[in-house]
Length: 600
Image (tube, rainbow, N blue to C red):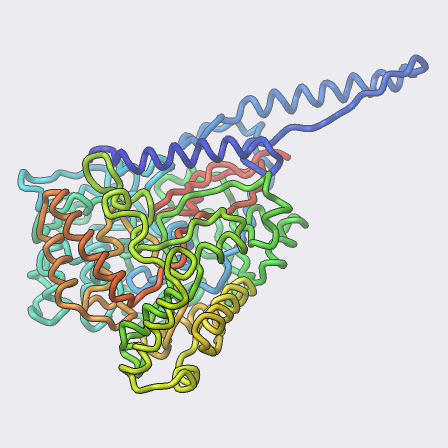
């Protein structure tokens, strides 16, 4: 597969920004020290010997540092032991309890982080973001002339308990996610595969008609319904990781719910899991490429309080952490900014008494001065979003999707909507609904996360809704898992959310809001939107595909089942001796296979 030019460019920009910031004290390459030697004509011989010894130690440290690779390396098996810390234990914060470590049911970033470290798919992406043969379980593959049939040749590999990893594990996992009985929210990721969608929707019942077959233990044949240039890149996603049929049949719903029930065929395995407290991973000696894994353990904390997270970093209990807005000034010179293909938005449940009204949804969106929110709370480091697709996602003709579609598809009270216009729209909504502000205030709530920063942002939105609409919106906080469950069941009116792209194409965002997509938490249904997305799905010409999705995005922003808030730029504070973590704008945001810790 050809290198994706936009992703390489975006990674280069990110890496350049990283190197620029690392010399300031908290970045990747900060190993400098400031030693001052005072001259004294009365120095004793002992003091002179000490000075000589100190200089020799500095020289030794510089020599050891010089042995470390300057940039990212996948050749970690040949790293000099002289540069490595004796204790290879990485301490990080997961942020929350991972709701689900079953790869075919998982839908969240916390779980994905663990799954990426403990399982191995057909491919594994390194720092380049390229799809490479031999990077994962597939040592090679062949594609037929019409690009609809893929034949993967798998390597000899084992699960952590010694059982072989076979093509049957992949066939089982992929057909499992297509099963209507499992009802996975990520089933749509497999719809490229022949008859996958029909099987999931019950239109066919014979799994043998699905285009996935283990020819033998080391050969997996996959047939697509039509060519899709993004198919291979999707295979890094946890949805396509292998699964253990024997364990699932034995443990059922308990599968992957406790440390001893989480199967592993990746670089690490789960050795300890104290729910709502911590997860410990340790190196998996059965991993096919165990020689490349340097870390012995990874300690994941589950801390939601931002002050606690930063405090743990300052006391050495964490090796890196995200930096909340209240600490930006303090660490501005040490921040590493990482671009993510992610959009945050407020999800609006259109299947509710009042929010079924388009004008009310637009009023709620326009009443929030989104640019002011991020300039005030985030020092302008995070860009406000006025569309769904984040910057950097591919378009055509050398332009990104955002450049083709336009940067802002709607305006709010801070970017052009007047108070008079907002009042008129809101009053029209009330009239159409036959409701009062008091009625709405009793019915509409804003559901957000447990973190203190989540509450701060919610309170700002609450204040703006009150000031600009006269609407009192109650705030609800819950754990991540509870919030996901309430979204899935429709037990909410407005909820904070967002989406991280799964592959480099606008479709990874756009198909979310099709009427029949199980991830469409808005309950919004629009036949015109569905038709435009189906057109994009059935075209191989990139311009035709993108043009259809551009029109669909305009329709989405006019109907407002979601209210975009920002495009994510992660702010990272990291120890200079932590090296080689894979951070990509898409799919892999914290890959640790090749990570290591320098002497310090």
